[in-house]
Image (cartoon, rainbow, N blue to C red; front, side, top):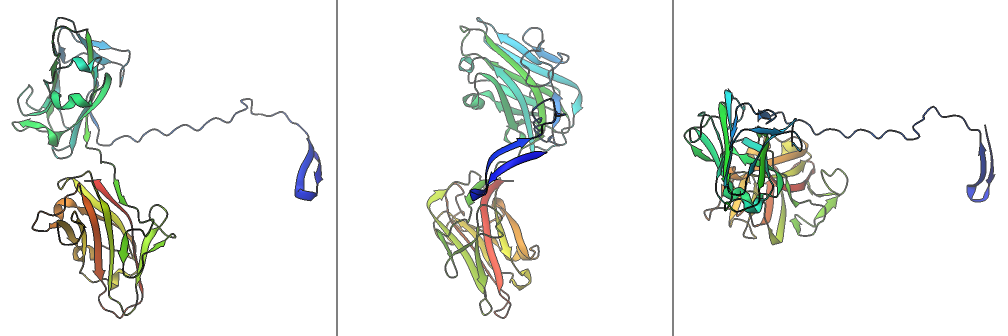
Length: 371
C-alpha cells in the first residue's frame, strides 16, 4: 500500500510512504553478466603446448615451469647463465602434424620469453620443418629481424609461412620439427631467463580495414550536380553520398580528390579496395564504366582500375558490397597506382538508355583491407 501527497503544480513528488517487504534477493546486487569469450579460431591447430618435457631438447635437461605460463599448465624454461652465450629449444614430433593450411595462408605462432632483450645478439633463427630435422624442408625466420619488435618478458611471435626463408619443399600437411636458437651478445652478462609456450598454427588473421572515406560529408566530392549526403539508409557512419539518374539522363559518376595522399597500408599482392554501392534498379545499368584509384590526383595517370561490366551480373537492387583485388586491377602503362599514396577515386557508369524510371544510386564506406 502507498500513501503519497503530490503538489499539483509541476507534478513534483513532495512526500511518499511505502509499505516495506522483505526482499527475496539477499545479495542486494544483481549479478553482472559474464563477458563473452572470444570465439575460437576454427583454423587453429596445436603444434605443442609445452606442458610436458617429452620430445623437447634444450641446453641441459628440459624443465617445465608451472608458474607464469601463457597457456596450459606450464612452459619450457631455461637460463643463459653468465659465462655462456647460446640457447636453443628443439621439439621433435613423433607423428607429423597436418595443419590443414598452405604456405600462402598459414601462420606459425608461439610465445617466447626473454627477461632481457637488450642482451640478445642479432643472430639465430626460428624453424619449423617437415623433414624431421633442421635444414630439411624448412620454413625459417631470422631472429635479427624480430629483435626490434621484442620486449622484456613474454612476446607472442607470429610468423607467416609465406614470409619465411624456405629450404627444400616444406609441407604444411606434415610438420614434425621445431627449433629456435639464439645467442647473447657476449658471455659477460646477467643471467637471461628464456622460455617458449603455446606453439600453434593457424590461418593468417585478416588485417584490419583502413577507412579511406566514410562519405558522411559532401566536402571534396564531385558528382552530377551538387553532392548530397543522405542520412537515412546509410551503411556506415552518419550518411552516404546519394544521387539520381533521372529519366532523360544516362550517366553518373562519383569523384573524390584528396589534398593529402592516403596510405592504404597494403600492397598490390595482398590488398583489396571495398565500398558499398547502392543501385535502386540494376536492370537499368549498362555493362560499361570503371572504378578507379590513382596516385596522380587525376584519372588515367598512375591509375589502377576495374571495369564495371563484370560486376553487373552479380549486383542486386539496393546495397552491394564491392570487393576489388589490387592484383586484378587494370593498370596504366606507368605501373598503376601507388597504393601508399592514393589521392583520387572515381566510379562512373551508365544506364542502358535515357528512357527509364529514375534510378537512385549512392556510395558509402570506402576502405582498404587485406585479402
